[in-house]
Image 1 (tube, rainbow, N blue to C red):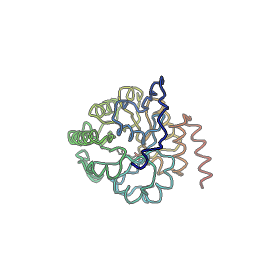
Image 2: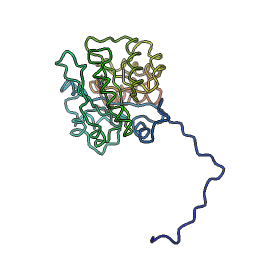
Image 3: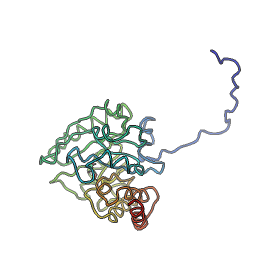
Image 4: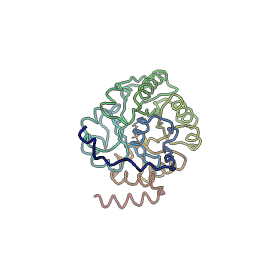
Length: 293
Ligand code: 5RP
């Protein structure tokens, strides 16, 4: 070996110093494999929280207001997101591969809104393709209590099994079909059920008694934004969810259909990562909105 001779001898063994204990900041994931923790660390910051920017709506809705030109919109505002939630089609065509964000890859196909029953989804993305795309987690839509409940659980099991094999976390998304319940009781049951089936992160809607729901769910919960509401109300919802134990938000329309998406994402960052009140965040939103005009 060319450099066999002349190496500086090892001498700094830190004798007497115990290896540092580094608690893993993501709920319920302390004993996950290294690769799993690595990917979770892409999604969640050191405070154990995350801001996911969801722009996967096109997989059921086609083009929607605020999401017409993902190639123009998303790269220009994504700086304040921790994670991008997208389909593989949007990711490949609209997001430059040299971005530094985590990716929550939408993996099931659940039919379009033109169909009455979307609950019989199928696995659409092979786990190998999720690996090729370097996904940080795989998102699976689950319609608990629907006619297609077992299809959802089969899909979830497929991705959880593959995820455990390759250390890729699964984001279980609590879906609410047209006729499905939207009560606290329902969300409590569905979130816990998905976690028991092995989902590593759960996405659900904010509701009454949310604190009980996050307490009873052994993995992190992020809230969906849902339909566009006034910016101040969306910040209030995010604040309440975080105060009541959510690990973050996964918002789409309340950012992308806002009067100023970039300012809205910055304001959400203040709530999620800086413990700002909704008043403080909304005030900052208004100032940024002026600045960014
Ligand atoms: C659907 C989803 C979508 O990602 C979500 O609907 C998009 O976010 P938003 O509702 O905030 O626009 O998970 O179940």
